[in-house]
Amino acid sequence: MRICLHGQAAQVAFGRRIAEYLRPPCVVYLQGDLGTGKTTLVRGILRGFGYTGPVRSPTYTLLEPYELAAVRLYHLDLYRLGDPQELEYLGLRDLLDGQGLFLVEWPERGQGALPVPDLTIRLEHAGEARRLSLAAHGACGTEPASHFTE
Image 1 (cartoon, helix red, strand yellow):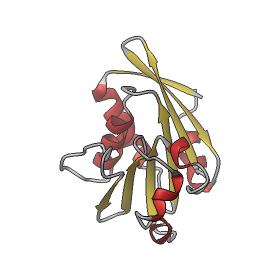
Image 2: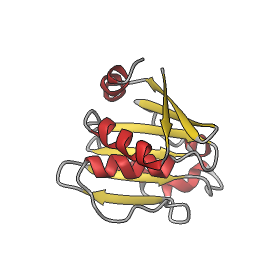
Image 3: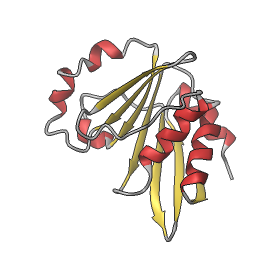
């Protein structure tokens, strides 16, 4: 299933909408080239949960936690991850307690150390727009994917 979004505002709005269907425990992989708007989508998801503060990509810290009223959300950006075993130093295993929502950019860099995703969102350049495709792999991913079918 593919969705075409024009501009950052549309990506944020989509993130807000999909947040309505994401419930922990849930792991969402965000895949796409640089500049496709993975962090913009995360910003929208956070806005959907009521977060109003700044949202930056955790490119250097690898992990940014958000303790929100409705959910514990963890935003991971693994672009600079040298080895999947480095995730052990972040305490990822302890965070995977069945209570959190994980949004993981560049999940292929953590292969073998990350859990299987419930939902994969692939972002691609489509001229000035972005094309998103959703694929459900687990319980948490089925509902959001079903609400955004063409």
